[in-house]
Structures are given as structure tokens and as C-alpha cells.
Image (cartoon, rainbow, N blue to C red; front, side, top):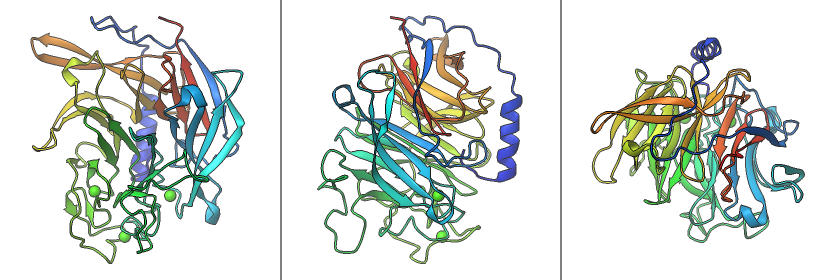
Length: 412
Ligand SMILES: [Ca+2]
Ligand SMILES: [Ca+2]
Ligand SMILES: [Ca+2]
């Protein structure tokens, strides 16, 4: 998904394709009532003809999905995808609506483009979109691509690249700037959509409602992968900093404005001995993984390692390895009960959904394993996974090539 070093990527993909993954047994009850297994998968939306994508070799595609907080009553959802090519390549955020007749089908004719911005290179498109507790839509925009941010976009607040954006899709046409955005009404020429800046490729982010924190996994250049807790108006360093270190290239080099005072270092970073491309996850708030409650679960796309980070907002974070998976991990998602799922990214025949299970081996000591939760699903490069927020047990996946699928459960 996120190209780091082309040769390494291809080797990893080949490894994933060769992997012999026996069908996992059904998850056992653990006393906390595991969520029901989905038992059918339907195509909810297919816009592959509108999407510029290159599954398996690059970072273009349908990259993000978010349901409106009032989806149950207004049927609106939003997608982020790349379109066009060459000099006309763009990132696009669009509003769609569910079919008036079928809750398991979207109306492909309902598209309304909300926001579009140019993509100078085909990589680093980020793509996560999600609504905050404030009902504003947050959008992850990468630095534009290539390597070393050659256009020095991330430190440049006059454009949208290398930023987390925040817009009001319920006001204005096609959207409004929230009045408390950090650069709302500025006279410096800064884009008022910017919520935070200095990011490289913030591929996945999530909110943790109990703490109000916004957690971002920002993919590094050649050395450091990082986890940030993002706050309004702050500068997360790129391309002056990579992780908690000055960035000097190669490739490219730091922006001419570097060094910049006041950049915020990550709450966690790791180097190449642990992985090569971070996949941000969620703070676990479900019922089953009691030993992981309140910890931020994330992974490395390339190494397949899944960790749980403990962070109280004051003391340095600590990190523990949960599972060392043998496949690529493109995304996480949560269902209505906050059960946590992850996507094994692979060619259509070998992709899967998993969840993490714990076993208490002695009091207070746990081991962890993955359980495949939907054996019949062969996702073609699924890149986002979210529940619709309407109280149903359904989960939705965005697939890179341009489809959204819905997993139904008829189990109680
Ligand atoms: Ca790009
Ligand atoms: Ca640069
Ligand atoms: Ca940073």
C-alpha cells in the first residue's frame, strides 16, 4: 500500500501471496460474548470506474470511508479516493447517499464532490476520513509524494498537503470552515481547512472518545515510523523532523524553513528493526480484550507486527508486542461494540479479516492470537474498515480498486 522501498515491497507482497493460512476455527466464547460473525458480504458501492487505483503496486485508490454521524436518518456517507492521472491527478472527497430502497446498497448516482486537491506524485495520499465528536469531518492528506517532500508541502500552510484537515460538511456549499479551526480567518494566506500540519503520510487516524485524543500513525521516510497525538494548530515536524530526529535526507532534504521551533515529537517511534510503514489503529474500548483496554493498538504494514501502546498523556509511552503476523496489515476498524478488527491486505484470493483474541495463561499474564472472522471473504486490497454507526451489526470495507462492501450478520 504505502510504497517504501519498491524491492522490499514486492518481496513482502510475494511473501503474503505464498502464505499458507489455514482456515481459522471459529472463535471460542471468552466469557465476554464475542461479536457475531458476519455471514454475508455484498457490494454496497462500486465506483471503480471513477477511481484511479493501482492495488498491489501503489498508493492510489479508494482510500477512506466515513459514515455521517446522522447516517441512520440522513443516509449520508463520505469517501476519499484518487482520480485522474498525470498533471490532473487529484484527491477527492465526495458525499454519497444510501439507496432509499435498500439499506445494503448505495446510490452511485448520488455523488457530490465536497473537496478536491491536486496530487503531484502518485504516493503519500493518506486518505483516512472520520467524523470527530464535534461532527466535523477530519481528512488526512499526505505530503504529495515522491520522497523527502520535494515540494516542501508539509511545512507550507498555504496548501492542503501534509496536513490533517477539518471541515463542516453540514454547512456552506460545499462545506464551511469550523470557526474554531486554528487558522480560521488568518491573514497569512494559510488554508483555513488546516487542523494540524507537518505530516508526511498520515495514512490512518482515529479518535478515542473517552479521552478526546486524535491518534495518528504517520509513515516515515527511511528511518522512523511514528505515532502522534494530534492537537489543533500544532506542527508535527515533517520535513524538518522524522520521528524525534532532525531530517536531513536523502532523498530530497528538509524545507528551507527548517529548523522550525515548536514542532511536536511523536509519542512513540520505531525504527527499521521493527517495521517499515506504520498502520495507525484504535484505542481499544471493546469488551473482549480486557488486558488491552485503553491501550492504542497499531501495526506495521510491512512486518505485520501488532502492538499495544500505553499512554497517559503525561508519562512516556510504553509499548508491548501483541502479535507478529506473517502478512501485510493495511487497516483496523471497530464495530458498534468497539470490537477491533484488522485487514490482511493481499491479492483478492488471500486477503482476510481478523480480530485479536487474548488467553490468560497465568493470572495477569496474557498471550494473543489472531482469529480469522470472515472465512468466506476474499477482499481485494481492502484499505478501510468501519461500522455505519446506525446500531446495526454491519461492518463496511473500502477496497482500494473502488468498491465498498458490507458485511452482514444475521446472528443475534
Ligand atoms: Ca500523492
Ligand atoms: Ca523537502
Ligand atoms: Ca512527526
